[in-house]
Image 1: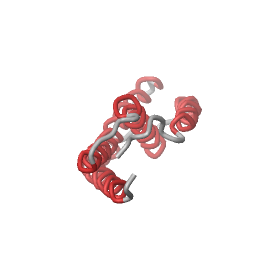
Image 2: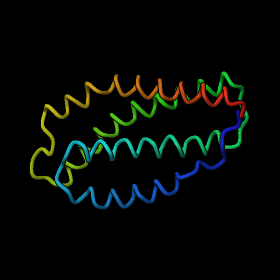
Image 3: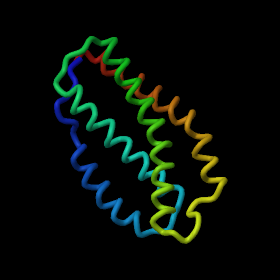
Image 4: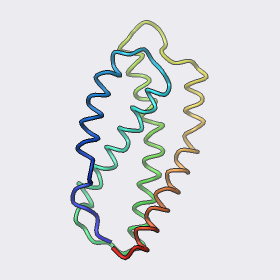
Length: 135
């Protein structure tokens, strides 16, 4: 398996993320908006990490599947953890009391293992498909 030197659409996602960030900062706290922010940031970090450390490298199919599975797990966990970071940033910037309820914070915390497991399985599945395609 050969990891791509450039991931298609990653630069476009960065541009969209920058525009979304500019709008997101000014809005009041909403759970869906902060989850989008956390997940998009995790996707960008994993994508740029792939380009930086794996771009153009050839790995065996087994190692490629492991890398995609671990990347998926990192994406899932990173989405939840970065959502917490952005919840804190949003609350700190607006400085008029909590932006998010205890129930919303607890819900994101409870979703951490699920998102990690789901994205790990998505990464595993994508890696198996990629390995089976013979590329």
